[in-house]
Image 1 (tube, helix red, strand yellow):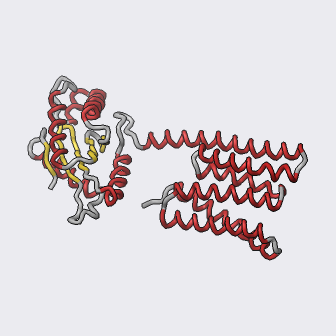
Image 2: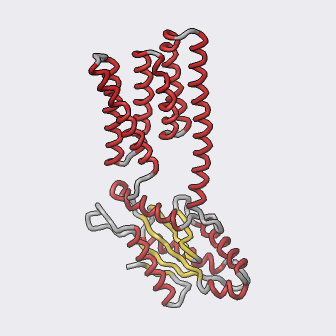
Length: 325
């Protein structure tokens, strides 16, 4: 699987930070500054371990929190040992924390770090120097928090837009593929039964040709509203392309999904989507596991079998449900 941006950020932060601190650990060890050298060495070792952990295990939640705590506590410890002359390390460290954590968690950790810095600054600086140093650290954190919060909001909006069909408001093909990957990757642990229902509006091209694309779009919108009102909250509806839609029914066997598909077929046929009767054809496929139940088919294979069942339904005259083999 392709690595996420979060993985890259944590690995860069870990390996770059560990590499940057390594020379200081070596020099301080040679100079006999054992306590500071030990603090530097712990940071270097911890960063390399966390970077390696993300590289192989690919779990970022634990690594990001551990890395933030390690970096902030390390720089605070070194300043307590060496004095305020190393205060400049605080700025990139605390800004970096906002890159690897959500804004609220980052604010908690950096705020604790700022509080822990106060005794060292009071000890080594006069009142004006202390106030100036403290205010710059506080302001840096405020700016970083505001910027990080805004960026997170924009990322969430962008993520939503890239996974939602702009016409119907349901998930798009990309969102479907991600959900299929999520299910197929987790089914070894959960062993949760699931079924796909793929549906296609019969003779939809004729609707566009006779009534126009605006009416065709309204049919698609009303269709998704009817389906969403019928399926469960745990089920997911996606626009697969054109007039094709896919439902992922979690915890639903093939036989139960077939009953649901037949109910949807009757619902659409009896609804007044437009003056003429609108019908749909549907294919149903239960997720196929091996005999041991320890593994199963890929998302692509699952979709292919369901699409084949839909093709069979259309070939047999449309306005019907067919089960995948």
